[in-house]
Structures are given as structure tokens and as C-alpha cells.
Length: 231
Image 1: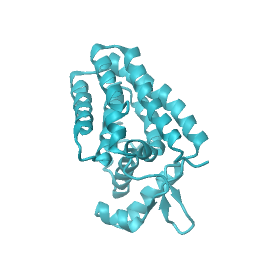
Image 2: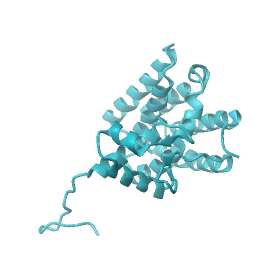
Image 3: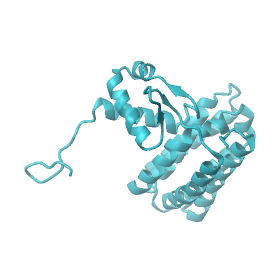
Image 4: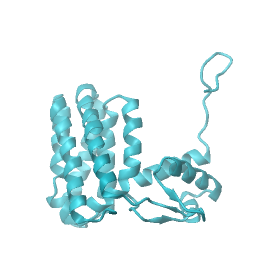
């Protein structure tokens, strides 16, 4: 039960160090900054976040309970491997849920939403033309674009449904955009993002749904074709 004040309203709770570590680790997973099978040292994570090991251990335990991380008997954390059947299943769900969120974004977006989505789309498109090949940045901006679209739907419930899916699939997206700079330059992601932005600007719900569905499906097809998923 949520604590209440004498006036009957909820009492504001400051985020703990464990909460902050959890949020940072979620961002790490969703932005594809780690890959399936990567081992995560609690001490290294604590040093990276500038906090003690205890709140990091708490955050890792929360993510392990949700299936986003694995924890061994020796309390070592690792990013779970993704099996082909599981990946196909998550992809089907993502197409439906995230496609619906994009359609809602086309119906409900504000001027601020359009600015955020447009900025992420432009940044992603600029990386296509940047020959430095910063694929880690491409994975991160891809996630920022998608979540700017989903935030524009104006539904906290949708965000709560989509976030756990990305906690599981974010590391696997490493296997798509980080494959090579050519994947960003010649793949469909840039075109799909542009189509989604145009549809959301125009209030075209079905166009936005189709663009996001195509983006998710094309990335999944490439990852499956590479044969990198666990049998």
C-alpha cells in the first residue's frame, strides 16, 4: 500500500541509491550497451556509477527477478543469452504493442513530442552519413527514437509494457546495428524512422504503426539471419 500523508495524498519518496543504480542499469540494457553473454562485475559497475557495491547488488537482484539479468551462485551477473524461439516470440509481441503505441502517438502527439522524435530521427540519420562508424551511439539513439515515439502515445501503461520487452531485447539489438557501419547505411532503420516521423506528424496512425512494425521486423530478420542467437 502506498504511504499517505495526513492530508490523504501520497508521500513523495526520494529515489534511493538502489533505485538510481536500477535506472542506470536499465538504460544500459535498453540502449544495447551490453551484448548477450556479457559478464557484469558488480565492483566495476559500482565504480562506473560512483557508488558502493550494495546498491548495485540490490539493482542487479531486481533485474534478475524480472529476467533481464542472470545471477550465478557466486553472485556474478551476466546478460542472458537469447534463444531463437524466444526472440521470435518477443518480436511478435513487440510488433503488436509498439505498433499500437506508434499509432497512438500519431493520434496524441504534442508539439514537444514531435520535436523530441524529430531530433532523435535527425541524429540517427546523421550517423548514417558519418563514416566514423560509431555503432554504439547508433544503438543508443535508436532506443531514444523509439521511446520518444512511445512517450508521445501519452499512455504510461504502454510504457510499462514496452520497457520490460526492451530490457530483454536491447542487448540483442547489439547484433543488428553494431554488426557493421554498412548495416546502418544500407539497412532499413533510417527509412523506417523517417516514415514513422512523417506519419506521426501527419496524424496517420496506420502509417506510423506500419513503419514501426517494419523497423522491428527488418531488424529481427537480420539478427536471425546472422545465426547469433542461442539454439
